[in-house]
Image (cartoon, rainbow, N blue to C red):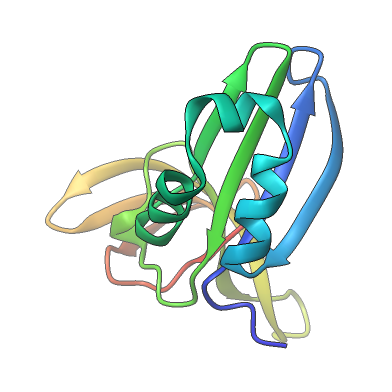
Length: 138
């Protein structure tokens, strides 16, 4: 199954301390249906507004209040580093040690250094990356 242009929905409650009811790799129609099920979402957006927002989203977005929030992410294989925001978590291609096998490394964007260069924390190792490097949404 291709996960490109599918959506992940994460439910948080109790002030972001507990996650429950996560859904991953949903097609847009299923994502809209899942979100409308919750009163918080249906009170903020109509079905058409929600579908339009999901189709055009560039990065994660949150819906809700302090005690019940929903985070929506989009799986897009063509996302590049320059589209991310400082503090965003994502995966990048990397190599394992000592075997040098290809792996997806969990990363956090630390800062923009200018000239399309970005500092990325790759599991406690800071790396200077190009803005055109491919990233995978977490």
